[in-house]
Image (cartoon, rainbow over the protein chains, first blue to last red):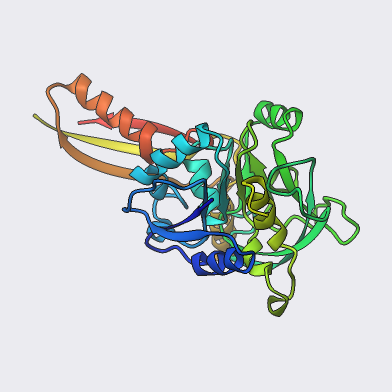
Length: 226
Length: 80
């Protein structure tokens, strides 16, 4: 079992993801986006500012050739995780519904947030229900049309919500104005997850939390590693 | 033949535009009260096509494939 961590020009947190997976003993490799993507069982697209966030965050990376391969892998049922810029890329590539756009308060926001895990997902099986994880983005406000949102609730595609200390998705707990406090969503089949918060930045006690490691652990567990 | 396409991309009506709201507020600080302030992106493209119809079709494709995000954007094409 092997997971690919994709590197675009402007990716960051790629090494953090690599480290988090290695801590778990997961076989993984950093893959430059121009390299062929074969013999991988899962993919993680890390955060960063691919192509300088030109046009729209994630828009240009979403149209690279490697994303066609990743799209095919998603159809094959392989788990695909996009974090922050990775989430924006997945939405721009239409692998998850909706889009992430400029925060309601149009400024880069970098802070710890609390998330509630909604329902069940292959990416959250090993997680607690409420977790503390950092966010760091300017384009993280989740937008989708109301009809699709209802379908997403019906299909269990809303995976994470920003919540307050009491676990309530309150207005104050919403750091970017996302619809319904949504922080992470999946495709209808559940094998593609796009999340704005950074689990790799909460994967070591030295960083202040290990809550994020459960996301990678769940993904690896799904692939039969743990 | 060479054609020029002016493509305007803007947020769909009713969509929150935090940047435009901030600029509107800044204008107010300078004493200019605007009831409405809308921002859009203009792309001026020049390219070769067999006909005006083909040029329009190509510009439309560019919008659908890259320039606009149909979830949040409307776009218009003016061909010269």
